[in-house]
Image (cartoon, rainbow, N blue to C red; front, side):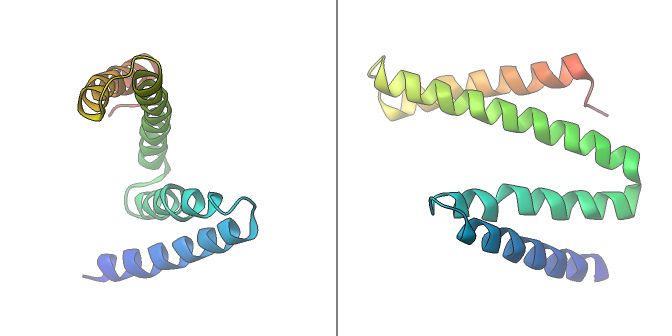
Length: 115
């Protein structure tokens, strides 16, 4: 029970801090970027270090980085399919999902970020 309370408060504090940073930066579209993923990742890694140690948190951060790179490739693929290939949203996202999986698991296999 106490772990959930710690997660709640730590997550709230970190999300608020990143939201303030995002509010200061221009353009305002950065506010969403700074309010979501970095703050949740920081809170999750903090709890992972506390519960399982730095080695486990290092593995988790490697997996997070692989996922972030794969998400960037996914986003670029969706954009290219929608704009250049004139695909509709459903096929573009389904094809890009396969690309995301290949990139994410490929990076994990190459760099050994798995457990």
